[in-house]
Amino acid sequence: MAIGNNERAIELGSKVAYEIYIRSFNDSNGDGVGDLAGITARLDYLAELGVDYLWITPFFVSPLKDGGYDVADYCNIDPVFGTMDDFDELVREADKRGIGLMLDMVFNHTSDQHEWFQKALAGDPKYQAYYLLQDPEPGATADNPGKAPSNWDSKFGGSAWEFSPQMNKWYLHLYDVSQPDLNWRNPEVRSELAAVLRFWKEKGVKGFRFDVVNNISKPETFEDDFEGDGRRFYTDGEHVDEYLQLLSREGEIDGMMTVGEMSSTTIEHCIEYSKPENHELAMAFSFHHFRVDNVNGNRWAKAKANIPMLRETFRSWQEEMTAAGGWNAVFWTCHDQPRPSTRFGDDTTRESWERSAKMLPVCTFLLRGTPYIYQGEELGMTNPGFTSIDQYRDVESINYYHIMQDEQGLSEQEAFDIIAYKSRDNGRTPVQWDDSAYAGFSTVEPWIGVGGNYTWLNAKAEVADENSVFAFFKRLIALRKAEEIIQAGDVHFVESPAAQVIAYERTMGDTRMLVQCNFSGDEQPAVASEGGEVLISNYDEPGASGTLRPWEGTALIWRA
Ligand code: TEU
Image 1 (cartoon, protein in one colour):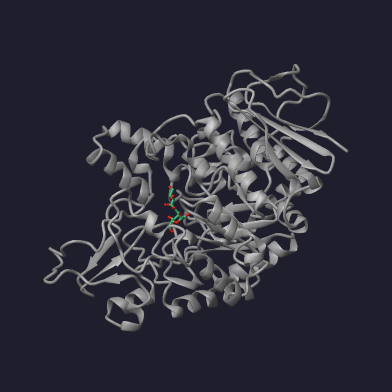
Image 2 (cartoon, protein in one colour; image 1 turned 90 degrees about the vertical axis):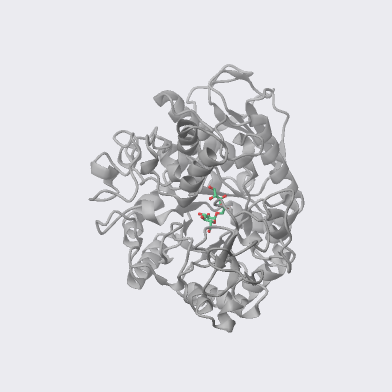
């Protein structure tokens, strides 16, 4: 029997969420940028896939320096994404299909174009108290501001502090220089943000995703970090639990579908954030499984995924969160990651592409948690194969392309190869709807280029093909809804018979399920087992016993 609250596990574990990176999903008005009406136009496709929730990335007023994660007005829609009427229409049409919307709340920082920051710049002390400002050393000038308040790095490269001559103060920005961090110690900030939640809840949204929410609680003083980039001083800070409880209470979102994006977090903290008795969040996103292809801790490197490390990451998060009543969001990618069929699978031949694009969701969809699909993943979309840095748009990727050359001594080609493998723009190319111009995403040239394989890898072809990657995702979603053991069963990782194999068991009463995935193009030994019914597999025919075929993902079940 699963430990923890079984009813809650069935509720959260029977749901599947789908992430829409709105700029790249579907363009309805021919300006090359995806929009709200474009989502409405594709709801039947999403209903056919069978998802319950759509997490839509920010579409609020924004200068779009960071794809909308730089919000200038939390309660109004940026004209490039549509109007409030378009939004209301989307809520209504989604509701008709039993689909709920989850909005993306970027509460760690605002855009520097937000009215609050503009007033702070103009010298209004009320709004200066909304941000994390520090006085400079005496005599600071624009050209010579002196030493920053601490040596912390921005996540997008460079210092996390910027000197504003207009205010004669430094401001903290953990992300881009145009994204000043909010001061959560200020109760006025907290109540403004809770009001944003109530505003959107009243408009009919069913849930929220909170951007980097475990970074909101900063220390009172800013110490230099001589061991790292500063993150140990603000990650999972002292008051995060308290602030989440406050948002839940004052934002009136307790019991809704909520998920926090937890950057560089720990299992212990995610248990607290997601266990129901704490009234914080329904579940947590953690990213440790994306470290398996870092090199010496460096994300900007090109290496194959370390599968034993991946297995250990999944094992610890699954088993330890379950034992303590926490709840995981499970996922292979999002709008900040390259495409999993390139990264964890093998897209070098059509056969290995299809096999691995189906194996990957077998591995995650049968885990304990709530699965998230990122747009295009259900088609097996790949990295686009861009050939020049000019094709990239993302601020982080472009910054690091230069940092790798200027500070780390890589050649232009080496830096480019890493970008082409790891950049988040690899996941941001337009969804490949059909084989027409611009992959049916838009009638004009999109804001970012289309992947080279759209003529055969597209939704139109896959919806019509009962053996497609899309059809396989549909089956997995239907299976999760039909089988209580997937929703709420306990989880236990079994010893891997080979380094490239990940295997785990789910149990509920006397029913047992064994999931095995081969992360390689070679045959591998299987876990010893007898009998069992094939619940799902990416191979139609049963294989030789004791062996897993290339990229095989199979689940067996023994019913009580
Ligand atoms: O990302 C959080 C985050 O930690 C990123 O730095 C992430 O590790 C990186 O983008 C991986 O390439 C969130 C959003 O998901 C991201 O899109 C935003 O840019 C960021 O916050 C700032 O709001």
